[in-house]
Image (cartoon, rainbow, N blue to C red):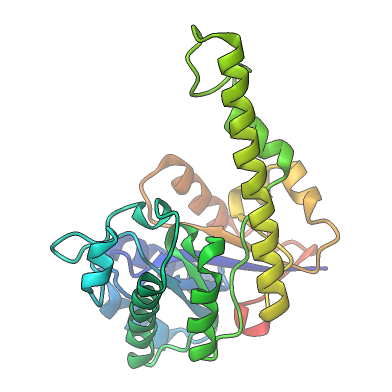
Length: 286
């Protein structure tokens, strides 16, 4: 029987999301959730956590939305926050190199977020991150330092996407044409651009492999990580994990996108939870 952790991301991001996650906690539809220490509904989160100790609560570390807890000059210097101390969306992924000065500032920020949760009496079972920045390979020592500092032993893996799916989804669009390339361009130029994309994506695939290997060697992790909806609805995704002992499935209740809303309904229906093929566990039991 496969063990499954169903984790709701963005707990505390706002009241709507937080209330929707609370509903799933109460019905037993999820076994884990991760908390944004710089979210807008942390006071509500604190009450829910203390009322429902039956699931695991992780830290959903954030470096590209809402207020920075440290608002340091270094984060501003490197373009991660604006003058008002708010994170700039996506900026963390645009940095090519992370000098020690920046790494230390990121460590201070992540430490402040974890300490914020600990100060509320919230036990941190594991970490993951908003928009998955904790999977940036060049930040592995930063993430490790923070985890070791607070004796956190569990972490979410990177997506384990097949090379075929990467190339299919990123190089070609649904009609089979080259994506992001002018159709009037010279064929030779198109081929060069496509090959460049392929090399970049294969490098990304390799870095995912290295990051997962790094986390596997140092921490307690699941055997895989997917979105709940993909695992539930796509046969080839389920087959990828057919011989695995334990996987994590991520969901985003309360968000406005149609796919998120559809997924939230699927989670609430508890098809996996009620199946004899799966055993629902939390990160506390990993």
